[in-house]
Image (tube, rainbow, N blue to C red; front, side, top):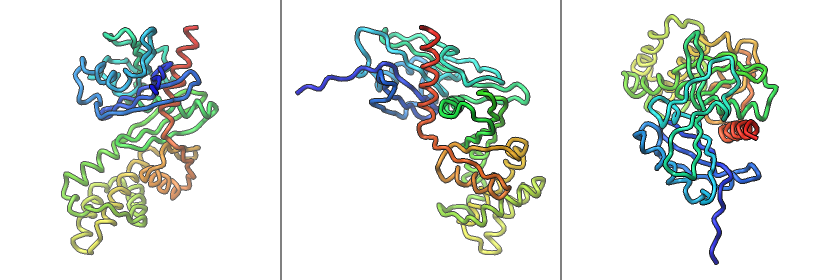
Length: 307
């Protein structure tokens, strides 16, 4: 018996630098199918975005109507399908009403790309994280405090009255990758193991004497050579030094505040334990569905404005 393919009411898209994720949404507001590919923004010419999207969603497009597609992430960067200009803080996470509409050749598509968020002083930007923040606020509209989004470029975001008040980005994850793979420290941290005591000691050292950070880094190498410190301990200490330096620089965000960490992976847990040593009992928020929740919120706001 032939199976009738369900058509999407609308399509949610998370399009990052390296990956593309799509959710086909039904009339009940829930996803009934999803797919992904490795065709991220970084590997696509401008005229390749629409074909990459159609590869995943074409079976779910109704032939007799236009299907809205709500996109967030690096697809809206200057090098993406079409640049979606940043919205300035303080602001609510951008909704579909602020989206840009790139040209598409398939008449069944109505693509909307959500903007990122910018902060003018000190200069900072985010693109993609604001959709996760919208997901948090859709579940907790009264959230007031700090959201920590660990990653390659960790974000600390002050949320109040449903708005992004200010934020700060730290390149901690990228620095860890560079130092552990492309510096002399690579000889001392080649391990997938972990030593929690060494991590916390690194956090404390960097917070106590951030001005000695460069020397503390080389001390990690010297400890392996002279004291036989294991690669597990060296890797954890390097992470601790970097997270500690970040916490020292972001203290105005987290000190005495309600903090929620988005994520449940090992990195999020490490941030939680580092904050606990400073007396901050950070809440952990599952991040798996936040992007979809944020895209759904943007779609609903756009739909409400157009009716």
